[in-house]
Image 1 (cartoon, rainbow, N blue to C red):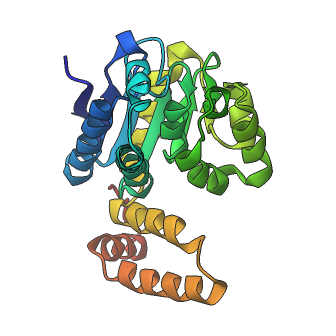
Image 2: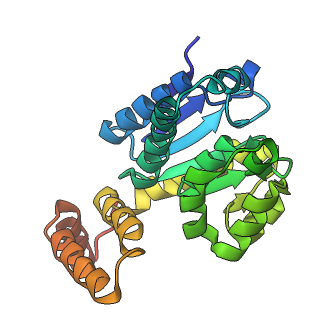
Length: 257
């Protein structure tokens, strides 16, 4: 059975975690397949927006338990290699040129909550639970911390990362991890409708430029960030999408992307 599934429908690419019997836990093999899936999605011209979803009751329960047993025998170099493997996946999703929407139908814990954190938008059912639970087993939420601090700030990140407590979908929405809480029966339609609006009302080139800037400008000094912004602005003006958009606006034509 494939660890992930890939499907494109109505210009929306769907990457589906497919280890329901293991609560979609993250094994090294699963991480490898996800990296391949997102690379495929980024290069797939038929997919403009990407949805990350899961089969089964859980979205993702974090690290695979069998693999955690193996970690006890790892050397430092083994652990570093393994950590970089996950880091590369998180960074790949965060920097993907296409918008990534997480469709969370169940618990997202530890590394699974990390997957949610690096997505651009998150839709979740009210029953979903979220938590960075690493400190409860003597581990460190090291990689996701970098992204969570950017997303919700230090005070709220500390509360979650240092306690390992689980929070509800409503609380996750309140602090900025989740964008929309949707009843289970309506979740799939809500995500597809939102993704569909992005597909038809936004420029893919503009989305890519905007995501790149959001990723890069936060660590720059003010003048450096503004210089980078000016360069991105100039490059964007030369794109086919920008020329098409300006022409349609000036001619008062309906614009369809």
